[in-house]
Image: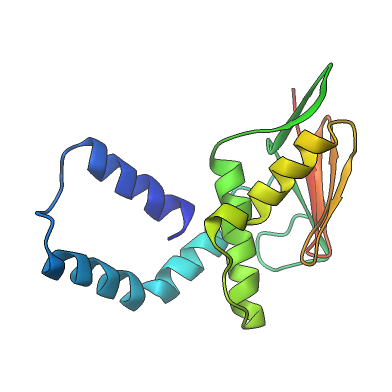
Length: 158
């Protein structure tokens, strides 16, 4: 599920709009998710790029480029950088899932996705400004974060 689908699912759970728990309902839910996976894929990509700021010339909402700049993924204080929780974090995880699908690779468990790896890296290296792994190269600054190779530049704004 992409960030939007997870948000809607959480709202339904909180609102008490739950079907009875049965094998048929569980199978039906997974069949529906499997049937709608292309729509979820497209919506995930669209939502990532709709959320990009047009203040940066590298951000093009119509195509992938070498680099995108994302606001609000990290914050900086006197102790160093901290990864923010929220919709930006979910969108970076969605972006990673889309790139894995496009590469034909297996999507990693959400306990080991890019946001967890980035969080662990920032925790262990609070004053570092560059995170790199196989898929992303992230340079983060007090203003924002840049992701290049789709690799990502991520900026934080005060």
